[in-house]
Image 1 (tube, rainbow, N blue to C red):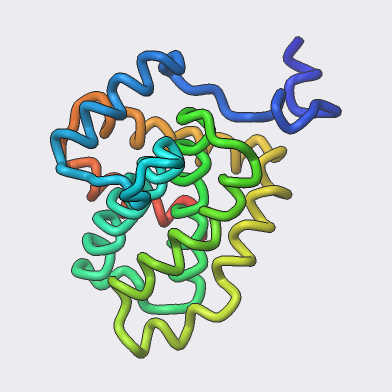
Image 2: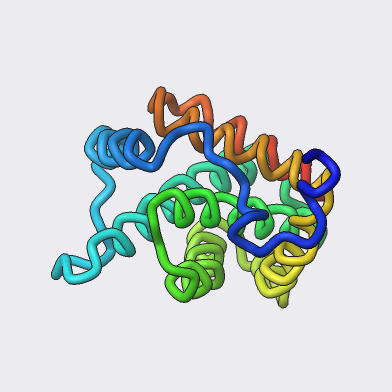
Length: 183
């Protein structure tokens, strides 16, 4: 069983496993939205799960980026690429556990980091963004099959899950520190 864990499996079989069931995840997710006053990005409510996932991903990634920027840990293009990868992992965690389709998830992978970078980075830092988001999306797809990368992604997803269950702002710092995992 261990030998077949990482080789020759479909994308769904390769998906990282959540420590929470989908029902518990969604319950905790809804509580987190209420606790932090996160409002869906779709005010009409037509695509409610998508809007809630997008809003929560923007919120959580933005808070982690604010911590990283204030700590002056984002200085180079490599730092921005690591931040983009963190955003991709956070979005995958929330989207996959929130029941989003692959199409919706792919759309968010580019939209959320671009939105957050524009809100948190200085003009000088924004000039270094370039293709960092695209590179992070493609790298995630290729690296998720590697054991060391999966371990790092699972650690980030663990922090996201802990944030949802405990609703403590300390996890912003943990997530900002997780950017170093992707250098």
